[in-house]
Structures are given as C-alpha cells and as structure tokens.
Length: 182
Image 1 (cartoon, rainbow, N blue to C red):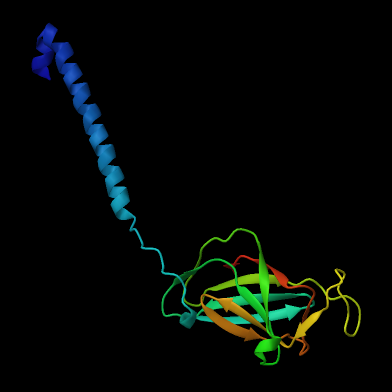
Image 2 (image 1 turned 120 degrees about the vertical axis):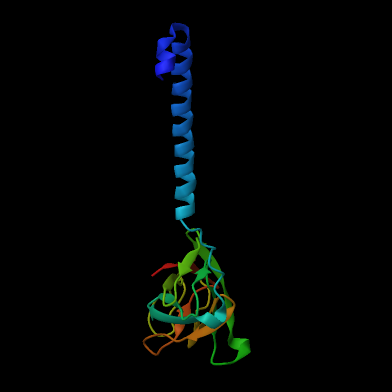
C-alpha cells in the first residue's frame, strides 16, 4: 500500500485493485457462508406412504356423523393423504353391503405421521328424519346397517356405532374431510 501511495498515477489503480479484492473477498466469503449454511441443514428424505400394516383405524360416531382416527403404530414415520372410502355393512351379508360415494370436502394434503402420530377425517351422512324407521327428505328409502367399513391406505376396518344401534343414511353418499393431523 505504501508503494501505491508513493506514485500518484498508481494510487487509483492500487485503490481500485484493493477495492476489487475486498469486494470479491466479501462475495466469496458470502458465498462460502451460504454453502456452509446449506451444508449445516441436513436434507431429510420424505417419509414413505403409510401402509395398512402400520396403521390402526378407529371411529366414534354420533347422529349423522362419524370421526375416523388413524394412528401410526410404527415402526417408522409415514405420510398419509387423501380421503377414506366408506361402505355400510349389513350384518356380514354381502348382499346387504352398500358402498357409498364419498363427496370430498377440503383439499387433501400430505400428513406426516411420526410413530404414534394421529390423523382424522370427519364423515357426515345425509340424515334420516323422524322416529322409528324414519324417512328421507329426498323421498329415498332409508338404509340402516349395524357397521361401517372404512378404507384407509389399502386396509378396511369395520366400525360400529357408539350407541349400539345402526348407521342410518338417506341416499348413497357421505361427505368426508381430507385427513388432517389430529
């Protein structure tokens, strides 16, 4: 630097060169910091989709609705997304089973379930009105079944109403929310 200051014409060149070195060194230091920051944050592979063997499915119900809860029983984290499938099951008789059209409510987003993690979906049935056998506002004949079969991640689980009665429905559809962390 002393040598540059001694020459009047070289001073500008030396200062410009010094400024360029400082700036490029700063840029390199900044780039090095960004690279170091990227390396400091480990990148994890996404969890695989949940499989039927690692999930337990249970349900609770009330009048015209049911909540389906899924628990990851392990051995590793997994990702669940989408909606359940639903059918009403008539006392073990295949001719009394009624697969239902699932009207999807909300947007399905992947839910990462750690071991022990939970997700849930809410089901809402068109109500059967009145007492005893009841009636449907649409004029359709009500359908009742003692159990419901819920499909999640390729597995089917049979669920009974909490009150010991039947699931009763008008029509052949059910509304279901997408699975969400519970």
